[in-house]
Structure formats: structure tokens, C-alpha cells
Length: 178
Image (cartoon, rainbow, N blue to C red; front, side, top):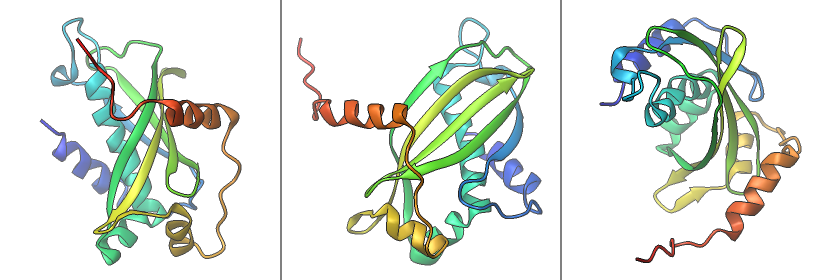
């Protein structure tokens, strides 16, 4: 089940937090609960992706994106992700999550997040995110201009550009046979 109560808790915890500039980092704190575990008693890889929402959505709130989505009746969707798991997160361990916008291209925004346990990175993800309306994808530069007039994307890191290039070569629809 989606962790709606935990998400509401994060919005409550950060209700008085100051707004963030679009490229600032949102920091939040979380705990690995028994229902987050896999059969090896560590944070489940799929649940990890869901828990990243608990940092990404308050980031969107604090930067003004959520207000813009509500005003324009737009939606936020994920269009891809590249994730690394490097350290197990065990039951009842607390972890810090850092979430920030890296930049955008003509269609997508790129968001970076990390889970940190006792000062060490446990996981890292970069998301390709899109805002949509009834006609499809809203161009990312239009969203940036609506949030902060004159805002420009910094150059995306080389590793993100390499990931974008790899995604552009990937077959769609998938060519699974068998």
C-alpha cells in the first residue's frame, strides 16, 4: 500500500519550512519500518522507489511546483529513473533523504535524490519527470518560467547526459520475445 500517512506526515513536518529556490536541496528524515522490508530483512528495492516520493513531493511543495500544478490543473509524472543501491537499510534504521532538481531539457526535469545512513550513501536515484496537461507533456522551460521568471537550467551533469543518450537508444516499445 502507498504510504499516504507518511507522505502527509512529511507535508506536516515541513509545513512551516521556508520555501526553497528551485535548485536548493530538501532534506528529510525517515525510518525503515517492518512493512518496508523484503525477504532478506532489508529495505525492499521497490519500496525504496516509493519512499523517494516522501522527499520529492515536499521538495515540489517547497519550490512552488505543487501550487503551480494545482492552479493549472496539471499533473506530475515520472518518465524514467536510474537507481543505485549501495548499502542495506535495515529494519528501524533511520535515514536522511536529500532531494534536489538538477535541471531540465525541452521536455523533462531531472531530479536527484540520495538516502544516507550514518553519513554514508545507501542509495541514489535520478528521475526524469514530466508535467502533463490534457494535451500531453508541458515543456519544462515553460514550467520553470512559471515558477521563477527568467530561470534557466544549469548544464546537466555529464553522467545525466549519458543516461539521456542511452535512454534515447533504447527500443520502445520493448522488444521482449520468448
